[in-house]
Image (cartoon, rainbow, N blue to C red):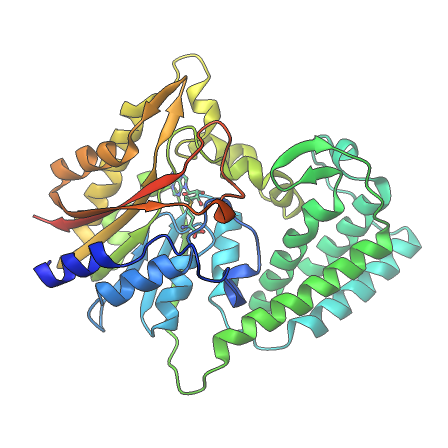
Length: 379
Ligand SMILES: C[S@@+](CC[C@H](N)C(=O)[O-])C[C@H]1O[C@@H](n2cnc3c(N)ncnc32)[C@H](O)[C@@H]1O
């Protein structure tokens, strides 16, 4: 990295405290600990990869890096263990062949007919009666069945994300981050209306992908895999830039946050929990994991990256601290210890403050106020 780039990196604002909240395609579905889009955007400008290389996010979550990459015309690969993360990432990076609101209107109409005729099969989901009123269950089940019948994959997946985006709102769950059951006044008709309204909003957001006819969009490939099980041959070997925010110990729980969305879409959150790096249950069981396990997991990830990155490529990792059983864990130092034996050196570290307005998903047990952006290069 040149001295000029290093100076620029240090001088730039990484807090984005005064920039407006994200808009367009980034807003179509909530996701815990998602990137502020300006972070990957600024990193792509600072470390522009060669035009024939790809941008990789090995923990792509809801696809913020992927959206920013395709918007600059670059091809990109994202990997995530969570099938809902991959679904959201695919939808955010795929132009629709037809309008989503028309498809949602037709789906809702057929689902309403099945609901009225009592022709609905409720899927087997644990504690469904606790979290969903009977008529909400029936309307959601009717929507799921009709969505599955949509023949065009891109439209079907956009409808699934639409449904997922309203699940918590129509459930008895107090809010996205509060797991208490409360009185809910939603009727079946409200569920169908919420679904159609969400489709209108998502359709408008997805149109921003194609709002500039003169811009070439890059192509995104999304792999629903455990990063620890991926072999280098499964990835392109021309990675020109890595931008990611990894999961870290005992901090956010993606499987839990999305549990009922996943159940309704036929995905298994409990299977994801087993392999989710950092998930809290791993730190509270017999033979519990600790930070050394996280260091080993990140080392495996860096070994993979070292085999697919171009020699001059950078790997940018954004990470906060954790608290495990009352001990503060400095994940930035752990990442550096994991990266060095895999052939990486630290090129720069920038500390950013997380503006209080952006901390909606901040888990109270780790109270994260600051994060470190670490830029690695190959030795
Ligand atoms: C901080 S989030 C990424 C958020 C993303 N930057 C965004 O903007 O949406 C970390 C991600 O790591 C994923 N993850 C956890 N364990 C994983 C594993 N073993 N393999 C692949 N992904 C994993 C989680 O599902 C989660 O989506």
